Amino acid sequence: MKKIALFSLLLAGFLSGSAQVERPKLVVGIVVDQMRWDYLYRYYDQYGDGGFKRLLSEGYSCGNTLIDYLPSYTAVGHTTIFTGTVPAIHGITGNDWVYTRSGKSTYCTDDSTVQTVGATGKAGQMSPRNLLTTTITDELRLATNFQGKVVGVSLKDRASILPAGHNPNGAYWLDDQSGHFITSTYYKNQLPDWVSGFNQQGLPNKLMTGQWKTLLPINEYTQSTEDNVPWEGKLAGASAPVFPYDLKAAYAKNKSSLRQTPFGNTLTLKFAEAAIQGEQLGADNTTDFLTVNCASTDYSGHLVGPNAIEVEDVYLRLDKDLATFFSYLDDKVGKGNYLVFLSADHGGAHAEGFMEHHKMPTGFTSSLTKKLNAVLQKKYGQPKLVTSFSNEQVHFDYQAVKDNNIDIDQLKKTTIQFLNEQPEIAFAMDATNPGGAGLPSRLKDMIINGYNRERAGAIKIVYNSGMLGSHYTTGTTHGSWYMYDVHIPLVFMGWKVPHGETNKTIHMTDIAPTIAALLHIQMPSGCIGDPITPLTDQINGKL
Image 1 (spheres, rainbow, N blue to C red):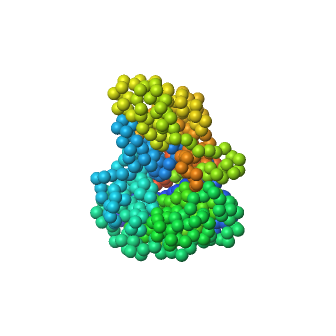
Image 2 (cartoon, rainbow, N blue to C red):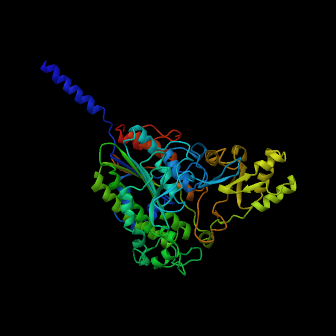
Image 3 (cartoon, rainbow, N blue to C red):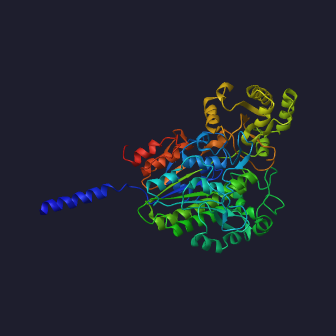
């Protein structure tokens, strides 16, 4: 009897032990907005040991990670990282889009059925309801019967909401006017005490006091142009784009100026630390997930372009902030207990003036709506058949097309012929059939992946390399298929991750299934990516 009892006890212990899936206590997904892949190495010699260098020296880097859809915009990138799929399936086709049939324009996370929580105004009337598939964060909630916690953090509403998925424990973003992190009634009816406590510290006011000086002596910023060139924009209140900047004056003139300084990233990562403490993320044996977007890199890049001392300083200071954040994770969750990945939602082009100065291909796109409508009116007798060029797509007034019995295929053909005659356009094609335009296969696939029949235009435009919108006479933007926009960093570090590197082609859609494989949970519902097996096989002991 004693032997039977002992055997039963051992068997129960074995079954109990084998039922526990081995997972990290916390997953932290960090997306650095507008971070070109080359920033990992461009400023490498000036980085400290605890931030980007730690990621590269301890972690596993995927050096050839590419976006595989168009357009390469913010909301699309964040959504694709966390869904493992593309706009054709997840439905987030831009930061804004035009509904095909109705012609109605919408912002990606707009939701008039919810209210702001934590401030007055409409900045909180947001939710993930426009997202058509699940995210990896949703799948963690489902896999743990909603015991695993998920929190999204960003200055931007869309970069907090979309990564956190449909049913997180919270998603928080910054309201510029109040200087507070807020949410919406989609999530909860009042801010948690830890968020209110964080807001009461008044960190935006404290961070935007005094001067923004370069972290290092300014002559050490050897990867940047001189400190005053005509293609850089100016921080609010500044007479020229030169250091030092008067932060208090800038903030007094424009509350959103915090976003264009490195201190927006500082604020974000401090709030991320508060979220870990407040929600007790990583405190038990059920895996939690924190999504963090560092957005000041994007705002700064848009303002001055990627070759400015300002951008270099933003990255050097972000490097220090990441080192502090990683040390916090070491102390709070425990080194080896958390899994981090760092990537980007898109890259960024060089400023037009910079490229022109250095004799590189560049230029500005022209406003073609009026010209195209004139051509179409002459042929069809209707004045405004084209409603917009949103997201580098041509949108037609389908009601006018229907009312006037216009042949849509002929309308497309006339439009494409006109566009292909414009010098700044490399290709224009029917978005439903890009294969007929003689495109490289990769570009064709990116257009197909970005086309959602309810949320995209009928004609897709691809501009020549280096072309920017005409309003970017200073600073820069993104959105194209060229490498400066679609080659992004991807580094994993922490729990079981071996040190290493691969230059195998990886797609942005591969990030979510890789996390799913490591956590042994289901992939997101619309996932088309594949696990990064050079990494997962090592972690799972298959190599």
